[in-house]
Each structure stands twice: as C-alpha cells, then as structure tokens.
Length: 250
Image (cartoon, rainbow, N blue to C red; front, top):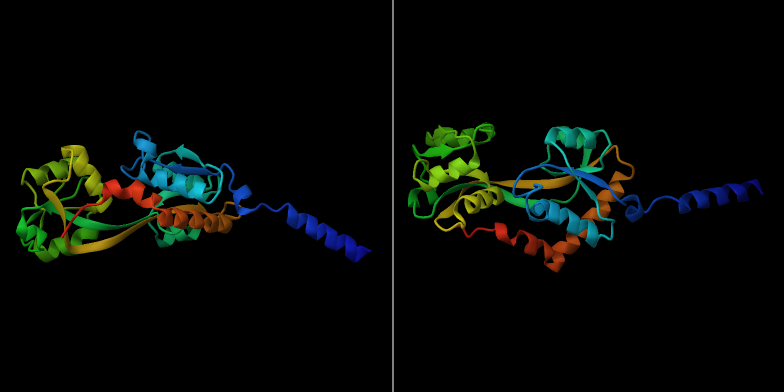
C-alpha cells in the first residue's frame, strides 16, 4: 500500500509539471532600440521582434510580453531571471555563462559598404582609402584590415553620417552588419541604388534570442522556440519578414 501511494504521488506530480507551451505562457522578453532589428517606433517593433513573435506563434506558445528596456537593464534583469529572455545578441563566453541560446534569429555578415561604381573598393583594392566607423562603435574589430591597407579612419556621430559621407565620396568604406547597412542607406536615400557591399573581408554575424539560465525550464523554452523558428523558415514567413533587408552584391 505504501508503494502504491508513492507511485500515485509521483504520477500526480508529473501530471502537473508545465509543458513547454504552458510554461511559456506570457513570457516576458526584453529588447531595446537597435534599428532595424528592434525599436518601438519601427513597424512591428523591428524585424527581430517580428521573427520572435512569429516563432512563438508557430510553436503554439502564448504571445510573449515584449518589454522595451535600456540594453543594460534588460540584460541584467534577464540574467537575474526577472525576465525570461532578451534579444538580439551575439554569443560570447560571458553571456553563455548566464544564458541559453536559441538557433540564430539572423545569420548575417559584417560587410564593407561602398559605392557601386568604385571598382577598386568593390574589388578589395583598399590601399590608403578612408574608412568610416561612427563614434562609440567598436573600432578594434576592423583593426587588422585597417592596418593591412593603411586605411584612414573617420568617426562622425552616427552611421547615417557615415553613409552620407560615403555617398559624397568623403570616405570609401563603411563596415557594418549587412542588415544595418541596408537600413541606414534606405533611411538616408530611400533606396540602395548606387551602393553595394564588397565581397572581400566579410565575416559572419549571428544574433540570437537568449533565454536566462535562471528562468524555470529554460531548456524547454529553447527547444519549443527553435521548433517555431524552423517552422517559419520552412513556411516562407521568415523570408517575407526579412526580404526588405537583402542586397544584391558582387
């Protein structure tokens, strides 16, 4: 009889454990302003926000609560388990200590944008050219290329300024994530005509939804979300959301 009661208690406990969908009901998810990936003023909250919402829906998970936070506050609250997840972020060792990563939201590249008719720049003949990286952006990630070609650095206030300087032939190269470059060019000029991304010295740029390791059943949230993300890729919804940010380049 004692054994029977123990088994019954175990079965009842198992029955009330949350499933991935039930567990994921109303998940609080933080993001901030990083156009075109995310932003309160952007259509649908930006393309990353649209992808997150679509993947949750495809996984039959309840619609998440999108919280617009400063990047520092959203990161810290997520790390501490106050918020379930945050996006879009790249992987690094420090983050992997505190978060589980979904499959990539974006598999982009960091490219060097230039003018389409600047044949030397397009073909990677960059000796003594001028490169534009906005103030506050990380310069060191481009240091090897800058030193190899003796590039002169220009640092205006914003990426918009860099693109306008590129258009005006005051600089020759503007490195950034391809999605960001396309967005900034369209914001400044209405279309990407006259601009391209050189195929030289590109590197991979992947961003993710990060689930806090402190959140209950974080691994199940990741598993369910990945199923939804796979579903929207296969259905064509992913391509529909991101198609505006593709660029024909050499």
